[in-house]
Length: 224
Ligand SMILES: [Zn+2]
Image 1 (cartoon, rainbow, N blue to C red):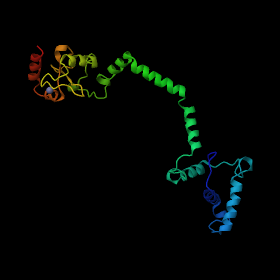
Image 2: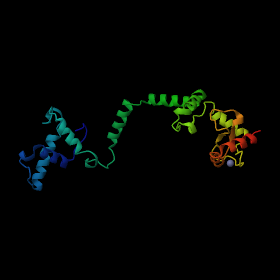
Image 3: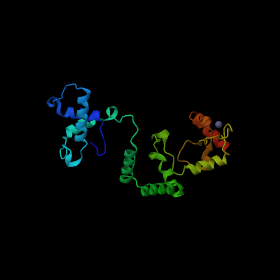
Image 4: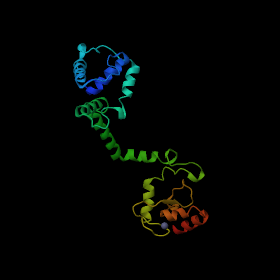
């Protein structure tokens, strides 16, 4: 039993009987209110004793017994199941966690370094580049899913969208809450020259999957 935890009297009685089973003089017997009160009193006196005065002092339960006890008291079977944690127990738990893992200092340090990384443009750029190409979880490989060249980054796409006034160059639809995709006119994702890039709305962009040659000629004409 954990230090500081108390069983209800009924549980203590039951445990006492369980321990001794058929050898217990009261095993299987029913007793009167009076007898019950006597037993309760006797057990309270005995089990309530701590340290050397307790008859169980110095005795160790086998691992198996401990496991059994723990199993029959866990989850729904626990007398505390569904009840809010005792205030002191909650405080002790909180304290032990704070001490063991994340001290206030550690937490502050971590939050500081996260904030610094977020505000540092160098680190942000590095991270943004780190997920372009094969490292990106969305990269599927293969000819039609070639990785974008490193220079085809957020900044470049933004430049093209700015040039195209944040509107689709095919149907003139302006961007709303989402940035329009930037299309590679010759379908070569490594060719990131400005004249090979054009802003399209998602609808028009999906049209460019078919009739590639015609679209290439068409958009090259648009940008001339
Ligand atoms: Zn469009």
